[in-house]
Length: 314
Image 1 (cartoon, one colour):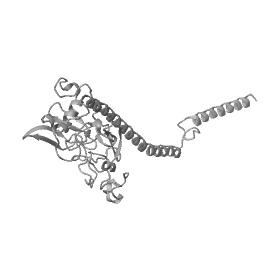
Image 2 (cartoon, helix red, strand yellow):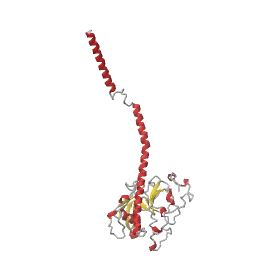
Image 3 (tube, helix red, strand yellow):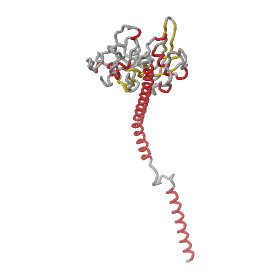
Image 4 (tube, helix red, strand yellow):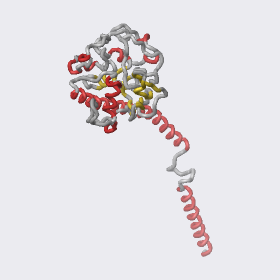
């Protein structure tokens, strides 16, 4: 009887040991029978869901980043408006003329405003007091340079040298020193004696337009996204480029902000301008804003080059 009890107890102990061993094996996380783990199919489903979410979100994040950069660009132009407005206040509402003092007037203006303390603030005829180094570059065009170079001559002598910009790269002036880089350009019509549209030089005292006396200044562009120090359409009938330009040849119709450019106007307002809208702006006082390449002038959607047809009509 005693032996039989020992055997029974021994069997129970062995069974308990086996049970504990099985429990330990079943509860191990590495076990294929772990009820709390993921199956291979479940893992694949999770990975697929994450991949789909990334595919959906990444383009949205990229678009949001571009919108943020465009907003910063307009903020820079707004600060330029304040700066150029101060220049006009100090000069009785008049900008310099191209070619003044042997150096392109627009270049002189940008350099005088842009290089801060790198130019003698006491130099005659030089505007000073406002530093704009931090607003010279659009965030969409702040790296590298274009492959092309340009040279300006006066009287057979070189007075300016530089590098073209690109749609997403700034232009640069390398001579005269100090060099500087920028991704905006001035409407060169505003700085020309022919701003009134006559094309005929006027008496010297009348060559400097009083900006404050102009009407509808909100339609006259002053400073906008560009690949050189000046930017404007030359004629109302100027054809749009047949292919999307990179900006390397100095084109104005550059696609820097998804079908738009940012522009500062003579009234110091800033807004995005559609690429097709460029033909409707008042580049000089006699510019026909209902010309050949406007809806009012009869242009049809199919008349535009193929790369521009998806953009808004004006």
